[in-house]
Image: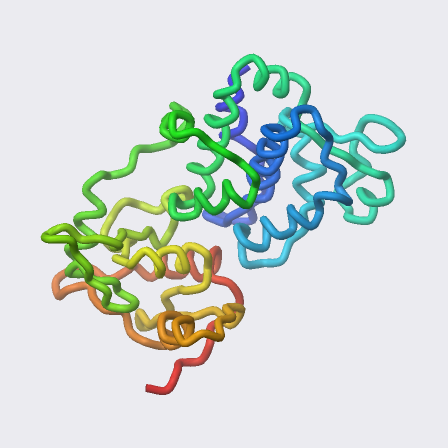
Length: 299
């Protein structure tokens, strides 16, 4: 049984093309992390509901959701099992049902056996889930949140289940288009002639068919790239910066580097370069940006 292929093809709900539904991948990453620490230990729904809810809030789509959905439905993918105080089988996808029945889940027996025979498989499975559902800027934080510890040899494995290869030229093309400065704050640091702390961010994530083209990219500093991928920042009509009302920061640094950006125009791209395509901006606003934007700050 090819477990990498199986986790790459998890059945996911989607009402339309491009909609994010990372509920099952997040549960599976969390379960892999617990297996790594606890082997055969079961995950009682009532005990892990809070952890799973935090993962969905932080790494899921902007719309509110419940961890009960993947806890029940992941069984259909053959990688997860659920039992209750009454015996095997899930009582349903309702929060009250799972709590009342004492529902507990864990990785399917065949998968647990495969992970014991081949410990490196766990890291490869995690890498497939991360690559197919989340941008690279979030991988480290997500592993930490899920309790996963991956070795470099595991995270460097590139599985054949990956759908396409990235264009290695994109970073240079995007940084050149924005004249080697962050489009949000203007940061342009270098060590000698080498840019440092500047990254090419995908607007529509590569994991969700975002193309490796300049009009789907934006040059951002490391801080603003992370906040952009976390949904704190976005790009609205007129290519002006959106700042989520859910963001809270009381320090002068938070006000200056995040809150004060609301309503500012992007810096770049340079003349003759296509700006970020409206379709890619709309995808990010719909699928990544959290909540409503703050009003523009007074100059």
